[in-house]
Image (cartoon, rainbow, N blue to C red; front, side, top):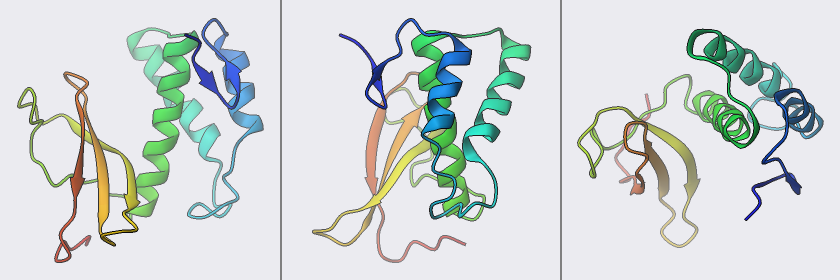
Amino acid sequence: MPEIFFGKDVTDWSVRRINKLFRTHDESHLWPICGEFNVTERAIRRLRKAAQANGATAGLEYAYALNQEISHIILTTLNGGTMYTLSEECPECGSDEIQVIDRGRNEETLKFENRCLCLTCGHDWHETEDDEVNHE
């Protein structure tokens, strides 16, 4: 099954071609970034540094990494520079290497829900915030 980003199958694409696709669809002008910086360019620079230290990736692996880094930058901006989880460890493997990868408001309960990812085992799960959670 092909992996689709912006309507394109990027499975066998080069890093340069994937970067061009993501740059074309950059939405840094929208909230919450509002044009303060270019999210896509920042994510590409971070992945370049990681590739120098850890070895290069390409194709599908690179597209996923770029998409995740863009999400991380935006979510970090939304939370004033701090991404937090309600859990202190992964419920699957017990690792403390976890990250929020998506956050949204449930329209029925009117509570925020975080989608978390364990960076050790890849398990993802959802957390619902209680009303008394303080984000500061």
